[in-house]
Length: 340
Image 1 (tube, rainbow, N blue to C red):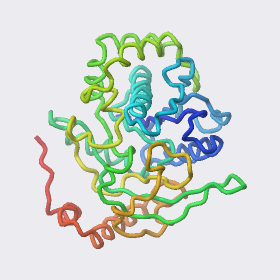
Image 2 (cartoon, one colour):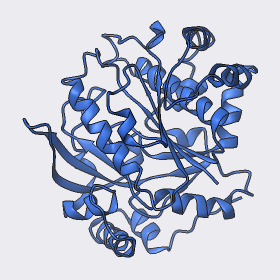
Image 3 (cartoon, helix red, strand yellow):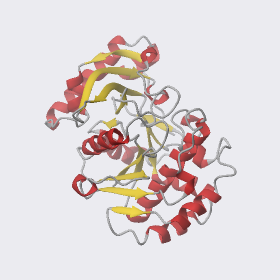
């Protein structure tokens, strides 16, 4: 079984970018950590408007799609205030990553990861093992990460990434886009709602992609833009849905991941949206030693035997400090998840 991460990257000329060299530096660190998943069959797709100079050194399982040939991905000065524009950009980039993966790899699960975030090194292994038990249910569309971390990060004058305080966050899926994992069958149905020929056309488009870096043809990008630009703002449009950060439970049936599955990087100054990437202190459960985040999320090399006790420690901390009885019940196992 296969797993694919898809990372949409902000345009270099966006007015929400403070320093694009920092964006690429943080992206590289994110990719390095994603490659440390405990299960090996993982593909990573970066959808961007500028392919970094270091792609050859990042590894053969990371693929870059350059979508700069079409005007649909040019930066819009209104995107900071208009959530529809941000959803369109991210939704289309996510869809392109899905289409590329389904034409090239055997992928059972897809996850969108913001280009500055981190994923627990055990997430792929857990989700692929669990799907074997859940996949028979017609009501199961994927997983949601409702428990996670927010981490203060900055870039020094020497272009080194510095990690500050780390916080346990409740309702993580309401504050970070790196929070949903989808079954392939679910996403394929959504793609076919856009156009009945979308899979066939994408297979043709990506058939010429032989290397790690691929410039997506303008013809295909313009076609995708033309079939989505007039109605993407409709609430149930697939581009609108898949471009959302939060509130996807209206459209899909998710099963929660029972541990801290992802971490949001905050404070580096290149965030999209009106909140500009600050810590959600209203959702903070407690502070966590940053060294535990580094070990469990691949920033530092850690023996696998140590990861499980770290996950247990984070869950205990989350339970102990949380004021929500619902969250306490879930962490303790008193609240059961019904499938089917």
